[in-house]
Image (cartoon, rainbow over all chains, first blue to last red):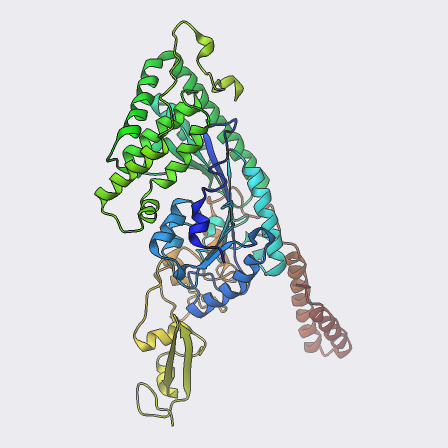
Length: 376
Length: 172
């Protein structure tokens, strides 16, 4: 049985994904909701019925080839910190972490698939890939879904499609989303109109961290809202097109910023680097915002390309539960801030100061590491 | 003689279930069982309720299952989910609820999605199952009609056909 520490020791495959051509798109995620026919949905089922559904689902899921030697637990077996770490890694939902026995999680070794058992629906299956790869992520997950369907009977209606607890997921049961890093659109005050335009065509946009319109770390998630009446392919194609457009806007905004105000960009990235390299106390808000600028620096060639992955991994590792797991103890907010600073300092130890080659007369050298929007 | 947990009469209803690693047991006499609406002896939540250590499920909907339903209101016969529950949680109890509350579903779906009927992936085998069920329903209705009109020869044929169809289980 795979240990929790083994699962978590390595960053997820998607975190170490390497630079993609669309550097603004960090990850693509596909989620499918499925339920068993003839069983009450988990939220309504009595304890015994839930246990029964779990007994059917768990062996079926564990038996999938992709889930060979997977991490598989009933949630009651995990501590609240462990569950929280899984939430921070996007492997289980926040709602699922609140559950205990009668619900489960099966996570593929490289963390590219995870399946929640008895979440809001009997099955919530997910696949994550780095970069803009929704089609690829869907194909992989759909294959897994088709294999499961050989073993268990799904609740399905020819008109309403896959039947789900909440009617907002009916039909395909598909939620496709991408996590985007949009610092230049934020810095140039274009983020509002861009996100509004996305929203207008029926897609949902939200900040990944933070409340309401505020988004820490300039991270945004775009996903489909409608699940019924369009095929998986149609939904995913539209999303990919829109996300790719937003990513291009971001690339253009980066180029424009470097052209209009290179000193401001260099100053922001330089300061972020200085703070992260030398701070001894840093809260998560400050850390996220500086890491965002550092990542931007990596994208536009101020730092080596590997620094982008370093930032993405740090995004996970500086969060509350990850810090607690690292420290092996419950931490006061003050202790958290100092351990966070310590981790950031040590990870960035070998990162040289920004290679800021701005020359106002030399346009050609502005994007030394392929950050040129024409390449996108 | 086992006594009822609530009065000293002879217990006739026994609920024993393993929950959270503990064996829970409730003994009830006929009248106490009826009074408490215990009709389904396999229910865990009933045992919990009777023992007084009823725990609210973390993360689940807050409504609790009702044993009695006010006259006239729609109830899903498979899972006991009521119209009232639907109004509270805006979610459903099981797949069959979508049939029971089809009018409400149609109302809720208005403007929610791009369309009203499914386009996309269909589980293999399930469609086959679905059509078989449809055909069975059809044949059964015909059978009833045949019996009602005393066409026993037709009825016999229909019965045979139903029998054959019923036995061809979808291979799982």
